[in-house]
Image 1 (cartoon, helix red, strand yellow):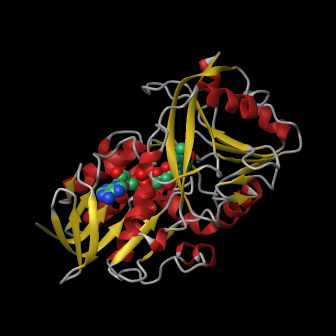
Image 2 (cartoon, protein in one colour; image 1 turned 90 degrees about the vertical axis):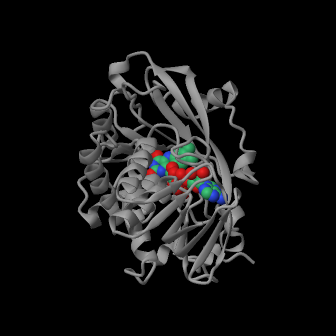
Length: 393
Ligand SMILES: Cc1cc2nc3c(=O)[nH]c(=O)nc-3n(C[C@H](O)[C@H](O)[C@H](O)COP(=O)(O)OP(=O)(O)OC[C@H]3O[C@@H](n4cnc5c(N)ncnc54)[C@H](O)[C@@H]3O)c2cc1C
């Protein structure tokens, strides 16, 4: 039996960040994960995640992204490892109505969010964009947003760094043990794992990602699990796609659903070499994270290349060097849930994916820790459970 102030269930992007912030606050915290994070079974693997502070998905996210950038830098100074690469972020918005992360108007909304928050950015003409980044072929009508401080983070390294720092500050970590039940206990919350471990804590945070709907039930039932695929392509000229010459990018190009893709420069020294490119799909949901097809068929790579890359990105060879599958936990409105459990006040629920969570995770972890400790009383309105989009039936 373990006694703690706070139990954190799930130690992926958000759980690791929350545990770290609880430990920083001097709280006795225990984190539990069904695997040994960082791992490749949830939503936080695949080497890179886009980051940007002019967050077109909603201005409520901006403080999380900005604070995350600060935290990654602090952790880099501590650990000596690179977590955040500000290689720039380009958004080519060729179709305002295209859906990206469940929202439309990503270009226009990013400009607005950056302007309102004072985030350094520029709006380029398509010709200027192609002069700056000759690997991209635009048509001429697109809205182009460039954020020089955007770029990418290394998700596995970020998780590992925060877990290590949390442990160093006294947090206890239990791995390879799945939480089976969480219920009100005599002094707060009782957490039971499948191995029989019992954790009694004053409060708990549930950050189980794609396992959240199965673990939490009704409050998170509207979340859908969507398999997504990642593909690493070989450039003919590696230097053209190196950071410095190539930014991270998001590109929407059509009115039809899912007419968008995004990608990253080729990072030297990664085990998986290449220019990572991915799309999103919102139609084929799976019932559980275990149901995900991990194998990515070459026909999936070929379809992505033909639909998105060909004619838009220069000098990439069509076959993938590597490919991987990963899961989105998608809210109907594309927004997060960071809120107290509707029936058990001492439990904080976190479902923060919808395809765009990682960049916010370090800053959000600080918010979640403070919300759980009662230092912040009001959850962010946009992330509440009691919003119309989550009220099914
Ligand atoms: C393909 C893909 C591309 C993405 N691209 C971007 C991007 O470019 N930029 C960006 O900002 N975001 C991006 N995201 C979103 C971002 O990665 C997610 O928002 C984030 O990783 C979600 O973190 P999480 O902590 O909710 O889930 P996870 O990191 O999956 O963590 C959940 C953890 O809970 C554990 N767990 C589950 N059940 C239990 C249990 N019963 N007991 C104990 N532990 C349990 C799991 O083992 C896991 O470690 C992308 C996501 C995907 C899938």
